[in-house]
Image (cartoon, rainbow, N blue to C red; front, side, top):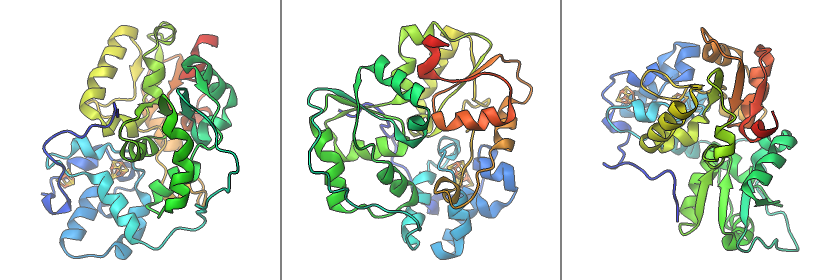
Length: 319
Ligand code: SF4
Ligand code: SF4
């Protein structure tokens, strides 16, 4: 059973429905940084309405962080993340992006176990990864599917052989807990009977972790999972906020402001990330004593610009 990312009705629309209202600009980190309409959902949708090809929008398509903030903001219910991914699929494959089978000889056995697909950022913070595994009772996983997560981000092809190699050991697991929101969504399509949870929610549901949250914490929600299931998440995080008193990276419309705003090229390591402006924006005017993040990828960005302690949610019991 797929318990997250259920799409709200009515069915999402495509770029043809864009009215040019510009509401998506208010929440888009790329607009905030560039103030250039060409790098916004509004700009891309209007260009497509006028018959422009994906190749002409290459830089704009690259710039989108897939944070998803524009999706709940759009009054025309356009799936603007799907629009960007569809455009990426129309462009030539990005290099370097190696998605080949690994020739694994022995198939791992996760029968009836919980499996954590931690992803590269959480693996880099090994203490947090181990803490998450212990708290959630997860088996160590041999294949996190990092290449598949990157391919999804880039709109690149994933061969049937690689897909099957990745999925085969996961099919018998009791549940999957997934750090990367795009990968979680795709796993929901590939394994519709599987119970799949997002890491941030799986951890923040725990009473022992909630007790550690303080009213001078800034709790940083991972925006992709949040916006993909916006209505349910607003209610969930409202409850968490009321129960703990901590501040969150939400704007007045309760859209999550991403802590990092990385283009596809930056995520693929082809360009250097520049997160300082985004993280400064998030901390501006706040009186907080600690930063607690759901996404391990945010840790380095906050540490670069702040002397406040930054901890991953999984590390709270030991903090
Ligand atoms: S997904 Fe995020 S970065 Fe991309 S257009 Fe929407 S708000 Fe902007
Ligand atoms: S919010 Fe939606 S309808 Fe309005 S400009 Fe952006 S994409 Fe178009």
